Amino acid sequence: MTVKPGENTEKQHPKRTRKMGKNTLSVHGGDNRARAHQAIPMPIVQTATYAFADTADLIDFMQQKSWGDGIHGREEYGRYGNPTVKAVEGKVAALEGAEDAVLFSSGMAAITSLLLSSLPTGAHLVMTDDCYRRTRQFCLSFLKRLGIETTIVATGDYDALEAAIEPKRTRFIISESPTNPYLRCVDLELIAEIAKRHKVQTIIDSTFGTPVNQLPLSYGIDYVIHSATKYLGGHHDLLAGVVAGRKSRISALRDARGVLGGIVDPQSAYLLERGLKTLGLRVSQQNETALKVAQFLETHPDVERVWYPGLPSHPDHAIAQKQMIGFGGVVSFEVRGDLQSTSRFIDAMDIPYIAPSLGGVDSLIEQPALMSYFEKTTEERLEVGIKDNLVRFAIGVEDAVDLIADLDQALKALHP
Ligand SMILES: *Cc1c(COP(=O)(O)O)cnc(C)c1O
Image (cartoon, rainbow, N blue to C red):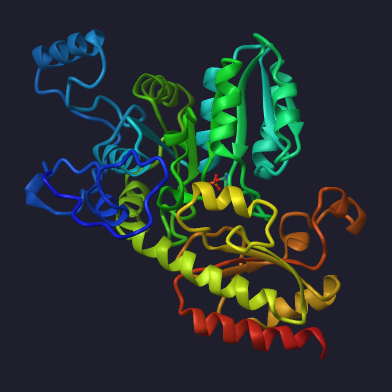
């Protein structure tokens, strides 16, 4: 590939580690152009296994395999690899400025495979409190049963984070940025520095960030994880997850995937490769629209509070400004209302679907009290910081004026 970066007037990542811009990498990242039948898109190689020409071919493959990775240029069995899957892995690696990436069947498969394959019994993790609910559940119940303990510290309390590290026992600091639903941002450079000082590895779930907006590896973070179901796929039509990082570590994780079994199917990998081609375009638009929506909501009399890292009122605005290009497509806000009137507002919205998830071309809206915390009482929800009047708006690629007009008319439903 000889694409030249050219004059790029866009805001650049503070620690730039990529040679080309977000849109060029979205389209061409990881592209080796050696396509069957001269096809431009990576074909869907829909197979569970791969044939050998004869026994000599098989022996040749097995010998090469025993010498090390990456030299054989063919696959053996579907759980170990697939050309469509490899194409996506190359593109994500290029976008993250990573040496390599490995794709999984879901974001949770990515997280659980990484932790299960790297933690010995008796190990210890430090996790920030705003982490994805299922990641917390996995660490606090599943890993606990295997004798692996997790200490949870408040997001933003770096002294507590450092104090929670146990010499020789702590293996990982695991965090997210921005978080769900309050879009808290952790200082990636500071976390990497604390971890290095204590010889601990770092994992950042960058699902809400996307490689368009932030590059955790460029700050010295060891592993970046995505639920590719969200922005990377971008169309609410597939489930996938990915881990990017150093070559030797990702290669070990790919071997672990062959044992744990969480490989993505070729069809979903194809959809993901197709979705990724517009990642740069989509996320830039979502950044812009979300900022406009957040600014609109902040001045609206029926909105009590807006949570968006692009607003100076957000507790982590300074950190976000330091390490992000844009602030992402999710805006959370508290309306002036209770559980019922907030639901009335949500029901009055015309454009977004009521659904969990985020990051796709269609806007989605939800009331976390009823979506993720339905089984809890108002008091229990407040304990974990979820108010009944909280709304999470995951912005798609619709026109900002239409989304704002929709919000404006729906907010009237708060006073029927
Ligand atoms: C959705 C999500 C996950 C889980 O990903 P799946 O693809 O649904 O398994 C993990 N982390 C974050 C931040 C998410 O939003």
